[in-house]
Length: 212
Image: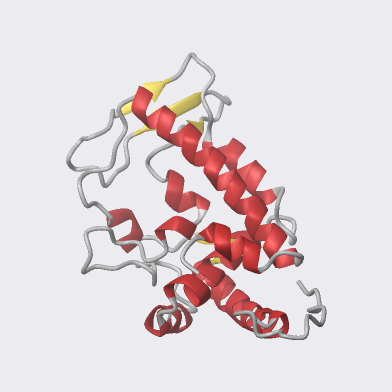
């Protein structure tokens, strides 16, 4: 497998597969809106910047963790990354265990990265009065984005995207730190994959059991 679409298809007919499909659809929609927002308001990270990942441990939902775990297991297939996730259980400060210091692209799971990683420094937020505002990322030393924008037009805000994300989750949107959430999903998905008999190893067409 080399794409999330193939990953979702491989788990077709299971709760996990539907969860990944729904999440990837939401990510695709958010990506389009976020790109349009950043283009309109000239918002961009500095070249090769990944400083936010060095000082932050994402807290993510079960759905997000499932997609990251599946990406690690069946697309990346990199045991060192999986070990890094497990070794960082208990780390709440960062850096993210999937961050690559030795690469200008930094993120090891970019296509499957969680919502906060997609929108950090690239999305408006609601202020205490409910108005949409944008403030420059504190790590943006290159000043490649405006310092502050107060919007009069209706723009998408982080809170709206977060509500949409949590509405997909099987655990009422409960979040936890990435190492713990992803580690749990790694074990679940490995078991599910063995039940589904990946790689066309079911020659007699016996129905595969459905599991979540």
